[in-house]
Image (cartoon, rainbow, N blue to C red):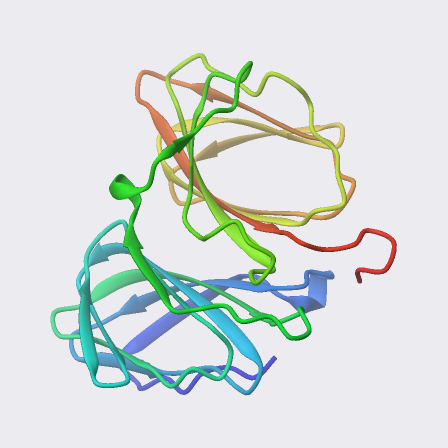
Length: 221
């Protein structure tokens, strides 16, 4: 997967990549004052999620200021660039677009403006950042838990996940291992790995989660 062009004012930490078997890349970028970045390589789609600060997104003739908890999805081969006048923290998801004849569109929004999704009997609050149509081969979930809340069932499925804990703390089960996690921790979940989460402490917890979608488990790689 070709990396975007970065200037010397930006540092990044790659949390998930193809070398571990993932079908996507997930990385954190610490954009210093006047940092900038260009679009990724051919055929690669990108989702930008702002963690702190303000990032200017230039696409076409438009300039959009993205603040904390704002996001932008850029379809493959969409010219764009990013710039941080005063610095910003950014989470980036990228993957090679996998749907033949799909027509995803530029999608820009804010977490707080997305409707919640009914997940009963689960008790957490779920928001999905991208349209739930066959044009998109992944979605991004924002999941909120109050202290003591947990996933109703242990999950196991063919979908991959890339998770960043944005707030709070808890414990994550992966297969038969248990991991204490706190804000800033990142997790890659491979297909068919048992997974479960419980929120601990006295603060609400929130995480952002990549999930591949519209994939046929019989033929998807």
